[in-house]
Image 1 (cartoon, rainbow, N blue to C red):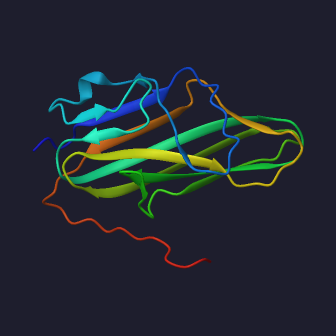
Image 2 (tube, rainbow, N blue to C red):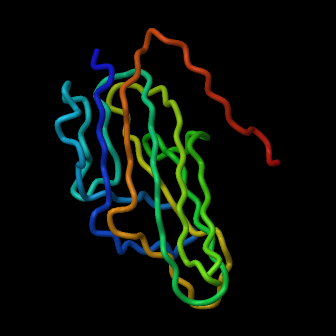
Length: 167
């Protein structure tokens, strides 16, 4: 067991546009803490990484933050979610809002305890959810977005709750 093993990925380059209403995997180009994965249980799927493979089954704390800046007119909204093997988990949902009048930055974050099988892939998917026709763009800020996974102790019990109906 490798309790406490951690991977921290960040997007150093930035500049990634989020201009589609179709969910797509967000990419991270830098392993910010390569020495924290003592047991070697994490494998980014590519460079830049759009998912992290977790070789051990068990419970993981997954957290992420995304920061976008906008241009153009009218308001914009971005949505993100944690996915396992490309499937929405129902946990780790966030939304961001760019007003464009005085402030054109959106920051969003979320976290969840995930129960994973061996070799499951964890990813952050994001999309635009507005109908802005004012030529607006949402672009990821450099050195501001990240994904972190921490292996938890499987002997513990974890409480996970999520919304099951629209509220």
